Length: 451
Image (cartoon, rainbow, N blue to C red; front, side, top):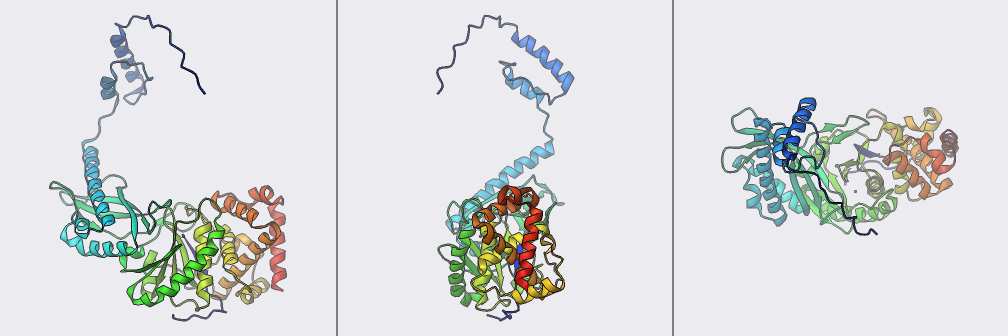
């Protein structure tokens, strides 16, 4: 899922995250010589009654555990057993490659693969090292399946990783498809695909977006105290300014951590026109200038190089990094909560006068239905209406903060966004006001501010 930020008309386009001892048991004087025979009889009855999967009471089969396990456990299918063994051997290869990546040994990183894959792996190795990969682990996701040719197998592999933070608390993850040949002493990697979008079953967005920047682009990187910024070599000159602004934005975003610890490090990618259309699937609405996207444990931010002014970059980064700080790891949100997530990010990003009030007034007076849960724009929404929608969300959240304080608003965000409770279930509990009343108060405030 992505959480975007539009460009307001005020910012025309430019091109520049205690017990005592146990009681002594009484002596057991029961005769023991008949246990094996009695146990076998009970086992036969249990197996006849419940089949091979029957669970036996612990301790009832003293002296015959191994025999009974062989009797009760279903035989593993030979094909499944072969696939499991292959997955174990592939895991060994993945571990070798992980160790090579972390130690900076490119030759060993390539060694598990056939020569046809080496160019892809060399580029990934260089990019991941530039991003200061600090943890990397690949694990099979499921069992290998036959790939069509004798001895070739397909396998989904989940990679979990951290950049620039040793022992990070919230590793990111990506699931990719691989192909292997099993015919020698060790499995050989034949293909490593780019990650593909994985739709989620509920809510909006995806469980996994399209190809990650480091999967498909060469990267140059700058690292600060709280942020990591990266772009392609063509935009290297923007890195110093981008890093300085990201570090300043991180200081703001750190104040909007709704639950748990602040992000280990905020990661920001600066996208040129080609990269904007390729990274994470490239399917952003035209009005989006930047977005935060979940990666199964953390979020990353992408900003578009030609959709903000020089003055607007700081605001854009404060908005998106606040998403990273305030959003949960899961991406189970729907459009009804858009006003709350975006309103909080706009509130954090705004310094002084809010820049979208002109479009906000126009929308309030000419087209808004007075409902917060239907405010989310679509891909086809005109730019002016998008900016107005963000402005309404900002005014609503600002009203809640001014009336109840940040602590209670953070509790509301946690309940609605993190715990997936609907506002009418939480408003009385957190604000001591029914949601129907509070919603009406928010709308009244927004309309008043737009006059």
